[in-house]
Length: 139
Ligand code: 5GP
Ligand code: ZN
Image (cartoon, rainbow, N blue to C red; front, side, top):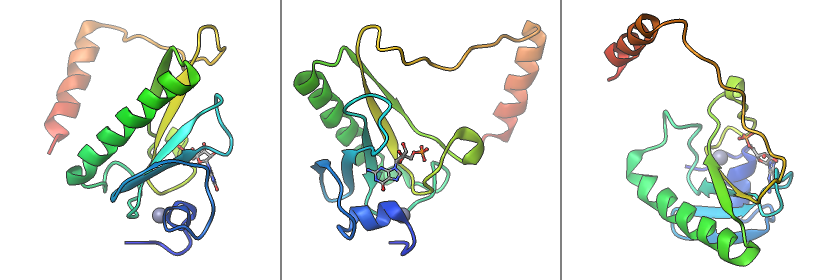
């Protein structure tokens, strides 16, 4: 399905240009307009899904393959020393384009990109209770 007012649907069907780096039947991959690092790529399914909760698992192998191909190219073409693969779901998580996509960001020694700060749990009991709450909601 294509959503007419969706920027990534329009990029995926060629209506809007992109700096494409990879494409197959299921996904397209192009440079992010506002890169976290030079070579930041977005992997975008050609069909419209909002986020990881409506994305069908049968398309996951195509995404996995695209991530590996693109990340390998960032390592070989840009001499990246590593890469981050992540995906935002919902505005609270920083999603701004509501067509699911994976960010693949090349990383270099001391490139200054920081991950978010990490916290801690007050006790092991609190942690166990939380794990149980989540586990009982898994469908
Ligand atoms: P999100 O915040 O939803 O995880 O990521 C959306 C990403 O899409 C952002 O990093 C943003 O820079 C990028 N982006 C938004 N509009 C366009 C566009 O029209 N073309 C390209 N190439 N990237 C875009
Ligand atoms: Zn879309």
